[in-house]
Length: 143
Image (cartoon, rainbow, N blue to C red; front, side, top):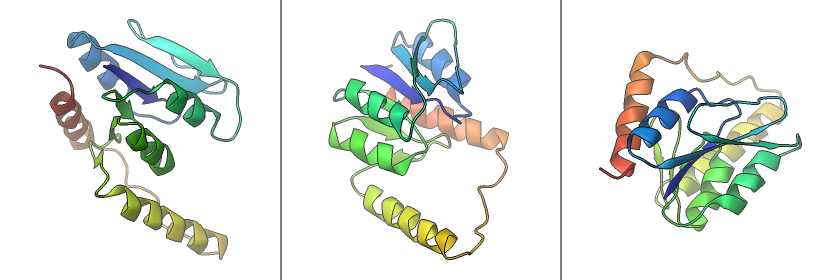
């Protein structure tokens, strides 16, 4: 088991690395050249910039039972198909039971934006979000 972090725009890199290392689980940070992120004890893989380049690099490295941290529904779906455990930065666990609805929501939002609608963005991150993420991550990591 390893933890793979889709680090482009991920607000929980530090929490993830710290908890994974505390549980003796290797941690891999994947990011592109415009978001180089390094943390002690974790391996960083820098991918050249390009549409979804980090996503495809991560999918190519994930194995069944690995934990993936991402806020990208498309990447989450690909990782679920490979047998990974997937959570977002707020601790939401992506599953076969909810991924289709999340992907549909993303599709509808994209259609609305392309038709000129202005959708409200996500709320500002709160300490409770970090707590919820840590609790969800802790449940997935070995004891």
